[in-house]
Image (cartoon, rainbow, N blue to C red; front, top):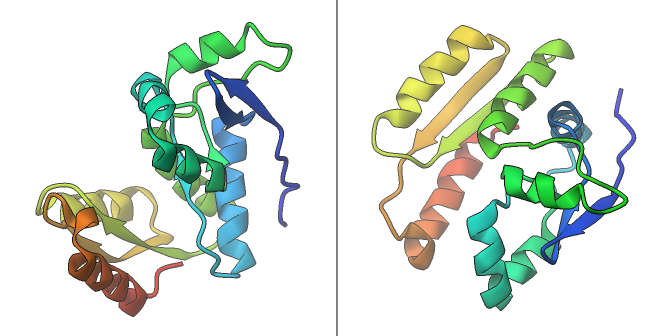
Length: 170
């Protein structure tokens, strides 16, 4: 069953942040996977460092505006939101969101595949082993540790996209 999607946001230091809990954010991500529409969606996880960069960078503001989900990764943002009439319910750390998604997939008794991108060489393989031990219904279909600065290298970026598409994760 697909949960009702809410787009209620609160502005904190100029950043519009979704009013979600960890469990509702994980459920939203799982809904997107279940929908199977393959739309490109992304989540941003602002913290206090992002707030400073956001004020100075038009590109970052554009990326935030186009994000499908914006969750408060930092407690200072949650605390500041409590001064408004619509405070954020809790901190939703990016590091908790992926395990939350995997637990939601498990709760729904579905099987899904993922691709792990990033970190130092070997970390993805170790993470894949840990994921398999904890969430047997989540299959890691690929891992890749790109070189530093890959996002500025168009050839490397296209190579990564091709690698992910070849593995066809959910």
